[in-house]
Length: 227
Image (cartoon, rainbow, N blue to C red):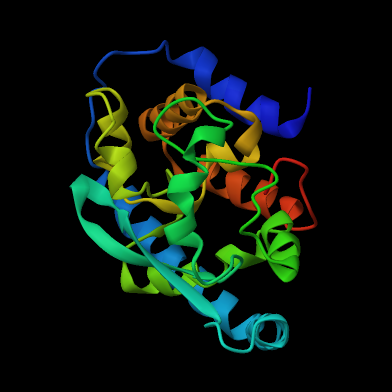
């Protein structure tokens, strides 16, 4: 069995799908997790500063007039909104062109994904496949808006379509990576993503976080499910 399948299935098999989960904040775990987040994000930003510079130059070469970074309002813990940062991987008017592409959505549910999205730039395809576009979110981790591991923060328009069960994804701080990313990512349906996030929240702990981080590092070398 593949490692990603093992992580997701081993979590799922110990906890049947609930309608409403019993959530308790684990104080010791939260303190240690925050410490790891601060150290990991700071260390990552320092060590990968050279990569940030190279990606920024490549983005500017392809589109000199566009910004290097892209910020977008996302929904975090308990519904709190914040600006999430990414390397820009799309054309500058991507948000305006979205409404014309919604009918081609390849994932059912409150999420939009299109494998051959015409808005993605050439350098954007590469940094998306390797998840390099997500690296600026280490700044969000330092600020406390996000954690290294947790459910991905959704868009406000997606949250408007959430059921009460889906809303439970927002019980914890969102993450740069999580069970969804290491268990199939865009090959999974919205409902499968939600279930993985709920399973993570129920079973969250340092060992699971570390397993997810190591699996994510391996995926940085490219994944067919990242686009």
